[in-house]
Image 1 (cartoon, rainbow, N blue to C red):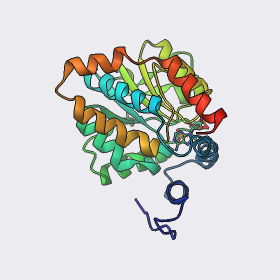
Image 2 (cartoon, helix red, strand yellow):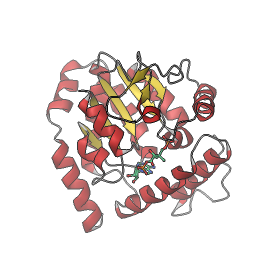
Image 3 (tube, rainbow, N blue to C red):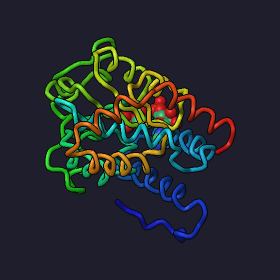
Length: 247
Ligand code: PTJ
């Protein structure tokens, strides 16, 4: 990824400016959609109100997400244009640590962008990337938005969906899948329907899930505790309180 942003690391808004730079570069590379710029702006506003840090309840959500990924029969990490631009290497690492598949799955779907994202993930170390077969469908969605790989998201019991559109998050939930959603807006439909809503910036969330997964890897009891002790509605209430009250 191109990180040649002309801002010193000591700058108080360094992470935020780096994030913008990555999204802009993603658009230039044909990986991120122009709508992705708008989505990023929205996310940034929530992150600012959260104090640009991982709140405690988000950390518990990240631990529960790691436990779900490790204990799944078939886990898939869904990758869109924003996720690919922001955390390509980190997504590959999470997939390696948890054994989850990577699948490119786009809201504004074009074959060209899917191919570019798959190639970009491979440049960051991915061995296999799903999403190009598109022989499965999510019921209840229009044709293009319904496409998934039948042996990927179609077959998965656990799906990590960063920055997902509300309709698709709802439809995936209706298919009975355990949904792990990364979204800085606790009021978004995606966060509201998630089994595990992770209200945190994807830039911090993905490495944190990986870290928890490393720790929980061999420990089935600890995985169970992380899942059983997590409460989605408390996590959403905590995040909303942090945003409204100022972190
Ligand atoms: O690449 P595509 O075609 O699949 O499109 C991807 C986007 C993100 C453009 C598409 O899914 C979309 O339009 O999403 P929405 O409906 O704008 O929702 C994006 C959500 O992600 C919003 O609730 C934002 O607050 C949140 N968000 C934005 N940036 C981040 C974020 N959450 C976590 N980390 C971020 N960096």
